[in-house]
Length: 129
Image (cartoon, rainbow, N blue to C red):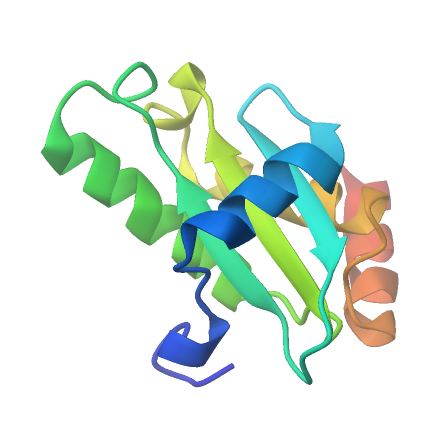
């Protein structure tokens, strides 16, 4: 990933990619969000973000939630070769960023998506709490 965020090649954009994740992706849930993942044949991970009108009625809020989710993903090192979908829940909009970041890391660990060094650091950080 770039230092600026998630570049175009790392974004899920096609409807069929989102549909494949919904139908076949492994899923883990947290009170703040749901994460789905499916292997891809690419040399990098790709990410998609879904924030429904039910989760955040105002477009300003939906965009803010998407930006926060992108930042939470950017801060982690994901293994290459995965498509990952993050689905916001209603409580996501009001959650502090630290909680959102922790939920993202927790779900990525549970799905075994983090690069080995991040998975170890996340486990150590999680044991302090």
